[in-house]
Length: 102
Image (cartoon, rainbow, N blue to C red; front, side, top):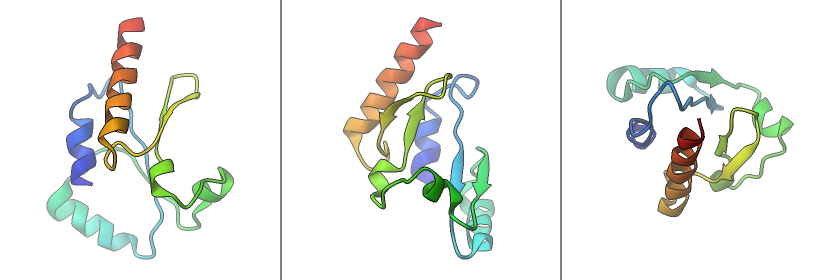
């Protein structure tokens, strides 16, 4: 989560919103870790039944379970920018392009 926090700090919060869906057996462990060290302030959605993954028929590949979505709900980039620098560059370029279009 620290890597996410660093990545998100590069973008203006009024222009880029982030939703984190968490599926875990023990949510209290995440909450303690967040409170003590991460201090993650973006919206967190707890998904105890893993509905998000199931409803969207997402693959097990964690690289493909992260999306950049435009204001109309269209997926414009697929991939985890924390795992791949190339994908991080795609995210940044697309966000910059969208800001210039406004």
